[in-house]
Image: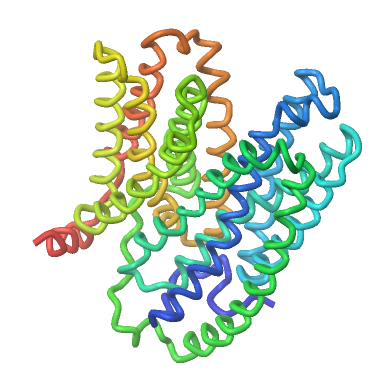
Length: 413
């Protein structure tokens, strides 16, 4: 049966866990899954050459493995998102962890190309499911005033990618790639138990609060209005385009940064600079609204790209690679809350699919860059400038209801 308040057919999203302790519990319940989502996703990228050498993969076979991972992310977002909307986010959060553990265990024991492909697909299904389920679970259980800030904090889970980068750099030579995959099974098993206990306590509290009509008694403001208008297909296309453009900017920066210094300090900066950007985005949303935050991001990316293209400064490329993650953190931190406000029904399915399908398309950004010959010289920066301009166009088309405008004005006074 569908848990109270968790049906994808619900039109209202009540925040029923306003207490500080419960909010922390909700946050960590969502965070622990996403952290390992990013860890595994980027670990596989960093181990691409190692796996190709281990199994004597041709370029085509190696690309097939990578494509299978991307396809699995999209299918997982749709499949488990739909199941979460129908049968409850909490139940699916536990089911996804189980699928993830089996996939990772299989990867650590894989013996040939076919098994590698199969377990990569299985793990990717879980990876695609986590983003939509975790963000929707969080959005439905925290007070409206904290929704964007906690959504931004939830995206700190991307630092799982930093862990993957450091592990691949320093532990791989000593431990081997199988141990790197197997090692993540232990914390996943422990965190599965923690998540189960958290959900057991949260579900009873949520159900009781909903039966008391806790939304009307919570003392919090009504949730923000939807900022993307039009039919479901139009709104989905807008979310998909936003995810594709902003994530491709980060994907291209990883591609670009490979040619720059790769010390531990630089690696931490390449990954860590996104964190203050996410907090900045949450602050901008609170003060000026979603549209203003996205317009600032898009304009800043265009200015940074053109400045790096035209500047004669010798260190401009390094500065660009370090500043871009800071800017990328702005949309990266607000998409979870924005997408959940955009969809009233089947929000887990639609928000997760928009983000993950956008992530798939963004994964092909380096291929497009090379195909267009933009990887030479300053023409690279024209690509990122185009992504910033695209976000500005999307933001300019967002609808901000009058009620939201009044709230924004009051919040900035």
